[in-house]
Length: 311
Length: 285
Image (cartoon, rainbow over the protein chains, first blue to last red):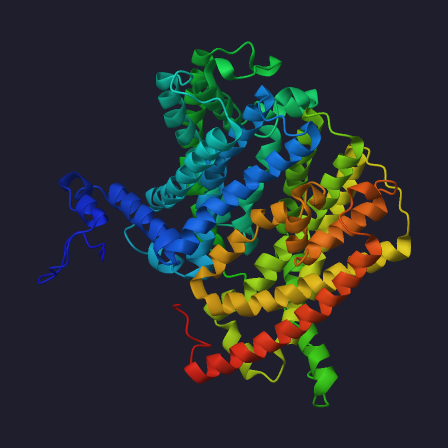
C-alpha cells in the first residue's frame, strides 16, 4: 500500500511505495511545487487506475482509442475497398493514434478540476492547503498523459502489425522524434493548463470543455486528413495550433521516407518545425501561468472555487 | 435583495399517474432552468465545438473521395451523438453522480417513483441535446450542401420517436447498472462511447461491419434508428441499409418495450437490494 506522507509517522513499517520514495528525496522535500506535482500525479493515477477493476481499466484504456481508430479504418475501407497500403492511410491512422495523447492532455486537466470540485468535493481542502495548485494540476495531467501514451503505443503497434503501417527502425529519425516528443508534450500541457485554469470558472459541463476542444482540433490540426483538404481560411486557423505542428513532426519522425508529403508543410523542414514548437511551448507556458493566476483569482472573487452545478 | 418566487405547493395530494407526472417535471425543472438561465456556457461547448468534430469526419470522406451521400451519413451520425452522450453522461451516470452528491437519498425518501425521476432527467436534458443535434444537422447540412430526399415523413417521425423511446429506456436501465457499479460507472461510460460509435455505425452504414456484427449492434437502438433514418432521408440508397425500414421499426418497438420493462425491474430490484444491504446512501464505493 502506498502512503503519501513525506514524513512517515513513528511506527509505520509498511513498505515504501514509488511515490513515497520520490517524496522522501531531499530535493523534493525542499520544493512545495515538486511535492504537489508528485502528489497530483499519484492521485491522478490512483483515480484512473487502481480504483477500478484492473481488467475493466485495461479494457477501457485500450478499447476506447482502438474503437476510435477503427472507425476511421472502416470509413476508409468502405470507400477504398480496403486499400490500407496507400500512404494516405498511414497518414490518417498515425495521426489518429497520436491524437489520443492530444486528447488526454487537453481534457485531463479540466476533468481533474471538475472531479476534485464536484465529484470528490475536495476543492476546499486542496486550495486551503499549502499545495502549489499549478504544479498539482500538472501532476494530474501527467497521469492522463501516461495512460494516453500507453494507449498510443498499443494502437500504433496494432496498426503496424494488422494494417502494415510502414514504421520500421530504419524509418525512425530518433533525434527528431525525441525533440518532437519533448517539445510537443510541453506545448500540449501548456494548452491543457490554460483550459484547466478556465474550468475553475465554468459549471459542471466544463468537464467536456477539454474533450470538446480536442474534438474540435481534430478538424484543424490535420489529425484525420491533410490540411490541404481544408478551405484556405480553415487551413490558416489550423496553423495557429501547436497540435498541427506536433502531429506533422511525429509523422515525419516515425514514417521517414514512407510519409506522404503535402503542400501545406512543404516549405518547413524539420528544424523549422522544431523551432516553431519551441517558441509555442515557451509562449504557452508563460500564458498558462498568467491565465491560471487570473482564473484562480476570479474564481475566489466570485466564490465559485467549490461550485457545485449538479442539475 | 432579490426575492425568489417559489411555486405554491399543490393543494391535493398526488398519487399514481399524477405523482409520476409531477415528479418528472420536478426533476426536469432544475435541468431546464440550469441550462437555459443559470449556466449558459454549454451553448458554446455543446454546439460550436461538436460541429468541428463532425466536420472533421466529413473531410476524411472528402480526402478519400467518397460519394456525396456519405457526407450526409456523417452529418446525421454527428447529430445523433448528442443523444448517445446525453444517455451516457446525463442519465446512465446520473444516479451514481446523485448518490455521490447526496441527492439519491432524497429521491429515495420522497414518494416520487425513480422511473419518473429518470424520465425527468431525460426531459430536462432534451433541451440541450436537441439544440446540439439540431445545430449540427442544420449547419453541417448547409456547409456541406447535403441533399435530403425524404421518402416517407410519417415513417421518419415514427422511426425517430421509437428510437428515442428505446434509447431512453436503455438509459434508465443503464442508470441502475451504473449505480450498482460504483466508481467504475465512469469507466463504463467511457467504455461505451467510441466503441458504440463504431459498433452502431455513427459515421458509416452499419452493414459495412457484416451481418452478424450489425445484428449484435442492433441491440443498441441507435443502430437501427440511424440506419432507418438514413434510408428514409437519402431515398434511393436503400442498398446501403441493413434491414428494411419496416422491419427496423418493429424491432425498435420491441426494444422500447423491453428496455422500459427491464429498467423498471432493475430499478426496483436495485432499490430493494440497496435498502437491505444499506448501500443506497453509502458514498465511497
